[in-house]
Amino acid sequence: NERKRYQPATFVHGATIEIIWTTIPALILLTVAVPSFALLYSMDEVIDPVITLNVIGSQWYWTYEYLSSHLSGYSTGCACPLGLKTRHRYINAFLTMLSMAS
Image (tube, rainbow, N blue to C red):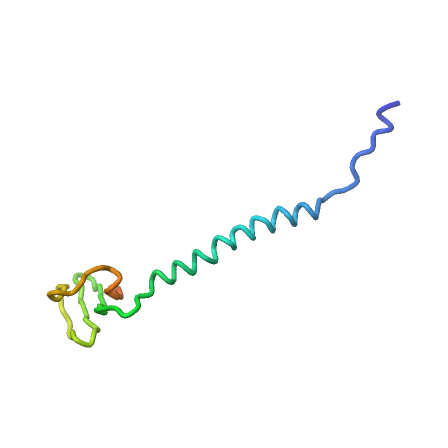
């Protein structure tokens, strides 16, 4: 009888294939993630900024603090000094938000 000769497979888990299909996607993710994080943090770094500006957001207004050596003080309005290049890579801005508890 042909039915009696049929033997089902004796293995339950394929450990080798499970390790392979787990490690290959993990390695792909790591090869993409590591350079992405390096680029993300290097984009935030400003080398030798022309001006450093600390922007503080309160509940109803903004306060601007100029932290550069040639500018000082606080302002409630942000104005760029005359002749200052306003490209993003030359200005180092820090944003802080203050939360008012009721």
